[in-house]
Amino acid sequence: MNKNLMNKKMSMRAHRNTLYLICLLVALSLLGGCTGLTPFSTVVPLQLTPAEEARVGAAVEVKLIQMLGGPYHDQTLASDLSRLIQSHPPLKVSVADRSASALYPLPGGRIIMTRGLLAKVKSRTKLKSLLTYAMHLSVNVYKDRSTRNMVKTTEELLSAAGSSYDPDSAAIRLARLFEHELCKQECLAIAESVGDPADETDFTSLPDSVKRLSTLQPGYELVARAQKAEKAGDQATAIALYLQAAATTPDEPRILGALGLAYLRAGQLQPARLHLHKAVKLQPDYYRTQMGLGYFYLQQRELHQANQTLSTSVRLLPVTENLFLLAEAREESGDIKGAMSLYQFVVEFDGHSKLGRTSVSRLSELAGRQ
Image 1: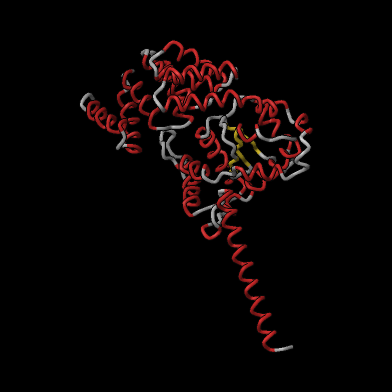
Image 2 (image 1 turned 30 degrees about the vertical axis):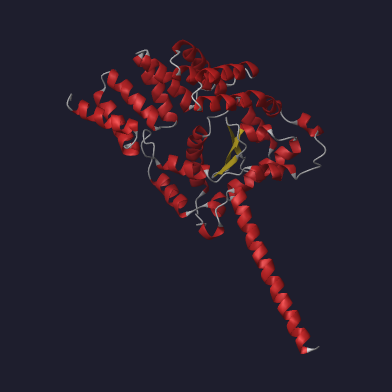
């Protein structure tokens, strides 16, 4: 073969291989960006026993689902989802009461799916495909996604229980890290790639608990409009929109809770109490509505109920606001020591905020009363 021709072919092959490598690296980079996966160069694999993974997954799930809007109130929904996938051990599915479409893989065979994601699934086949993909993400979550920070926080979680009043506990910090490791539109894309996209007749074979979610969209669109009105300071329009949403989509605790909190901010305490009570009854395990109801009780000086309700809110997810309100309730009830310990948590976690500065003042005052 002509030497010049051979050199030319070798050069072209090397150029083609270089282009292929560049394309592959770009594709991997884009995949990491769209899925929220940690770039492979920063992954720090972590070896955990099944028992340790189960412990970490359970601890993270209870905190993360609070950050995402609380657990969805339909008790049959998670059971219906779990039955759709046959895995050993079984996939543990929780549903967060959030309109945005997202899926959160957690250790120990656990996932959190949002109400909004499930509302967009069009068929039983595609839902099963999505759950299977979620199981894969959960099984490989530490292998594919663990950063140095995640490894360090996981080890801290396993080594100590921490205080249930600590808003910066290892479980909560780890939940924040997993909150960023979500699967968004690509999860729906995975599901949509299964079967014939033109054939949507399989929608009727979805569990009733899943089919119902798609009917809630009009009510939550009104909620989004109400939230914008609140941010703009138009409280009257916001309340009117929340009321319309509650009428359009009855018995949705997220809507009732938002309406009750809007009334509370407007100083209309009786309608606030009515709607917050109903929201808490439908969804008792969400920290924000428990906090709103506890604040109402505190305003009314119903101190026993305030202490009880705010303690429940803090147990579900301690944040600056509910810790401060519970400290006030303890102070008003004469529990000076309990109040001071809670004010101290607020100062340590958020000392430069308005509530943090107020807590510093309260601590100084209470120290003089001991």
